[in-house]
Length: 318
Image 1 (cartoon, rainbow, N blue to C red):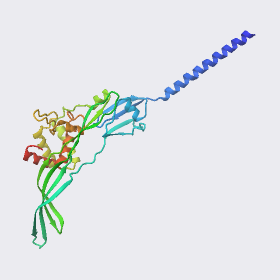
Image 2 (tube, one colour):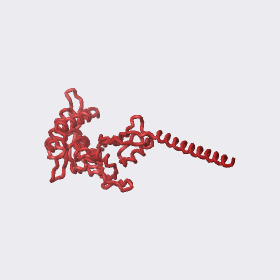
Image 3 (cartoon, helix red, strand yellow):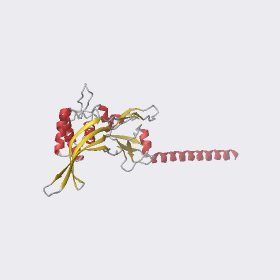
Image 4 (spheres, rainbow, N blue to C red):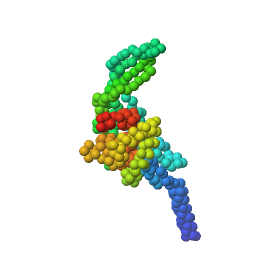
């Protein structure tokens, strides 16, 4: 009798043990089933994309998992703390920077004359010299980060605004300006670029995708892109034709054009070439990056490609 009771107890224990094991395995299976795997697209500032497979949903965790670090001048959408939305896309974009406008430092009236019109109205004509600041540019140089991924960002060179003197002929009627004509412009002091070193660490796949050389772009492709960008700036067809003449002289629209004597590089012949890094890390090979930087430089320094061409024809450089 005791033997049968002992046997029954052992059978019950085995049944309970097997049931517990099945419950544990079933729980693990349910948990694993709930861990969905997503294909996420990461879009970079230069237009390149990287597709990754991940079980994570938090943006910050996905970026860390793929060793992708964000620069100080970049933003992420959705935000780091958020989860990926239904589009399963993370977009890295460059922060919008306020366009620096030249600030008038001094204004001097060189000459003033009064003119009477046929109707007997008094017109005052003045020759005015304005000294204005030329905003400096900020250049970003990327270097490899430390082994633990720590950022080591620092300013290598402080920027300093330049100075230029512009002479205008201005007409006033009843103390109201009615006409302004620029007579001349002279750069008194060249601006000094601000250089910032930023450390970055990206995955090998991401790096490969971000460095897409477009050196094979034809002149027609480069000029078509430049023309559209000119329209984006609100410039005329005449301004675009002036740009064609200017960059024909500089590089014949060759993305690889390099002046071994001065070091000027690319379609706009940036000097030094690293100036173009502010428009993209692929500035040595990407015609769009070079054109974007070149047009931004012309806008800030001369206002229009036509004015830049006039300066180039007068001095031999722009």
